[in-house]
Image: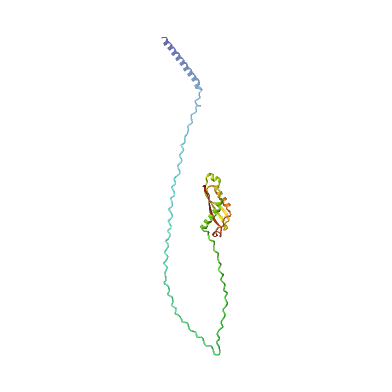
Length: 241
């Protein structure tokens, strides 16, 4: 019972306060409303929108017509040349042989002695003597391979006397054959020397050239090799026995 009474009192007090607030609010509006200027309210401006026309595309010009190709110039065909007219050969004129008329010398008049004409001596002609033929010396013949091989053997006999096997080659077991090319004159004097074929070891190549220097002077070459300078090769072998 008390709870119901309390609830009614609370409701009444709330209603009273609501009435009081409403009265105060209306009074406040009565005071403010006369001073409120409605003219100051700005009317929103009207936006004018203009539609821009899309530019028209330029007129399409038709393509220019392609001129027709120039007419081909037809070359006139060459006229055939007229065939040459072959005339028959003219007959050779027949010439009658005219026999010579014998002329008779008139006899000499009387009292005139005919004298035989004197013989005129012929003028001497100068005869140029023909030169005696010059004897040409025969050209030197090229040395034959047999002569070169024989002389190469004799050179090896002289070079082999100074053969010395390098110690470093013996220790390392180096072997090979050096072919020395020599240019000699007719007397067997050396003009140049070089290694035509190496043994593969520089020590053996140098030893072969030293043996050639120690073997100078060389024996005199045969007669077939004395006419000119010549080139000869001498093989120098190095083999461990």
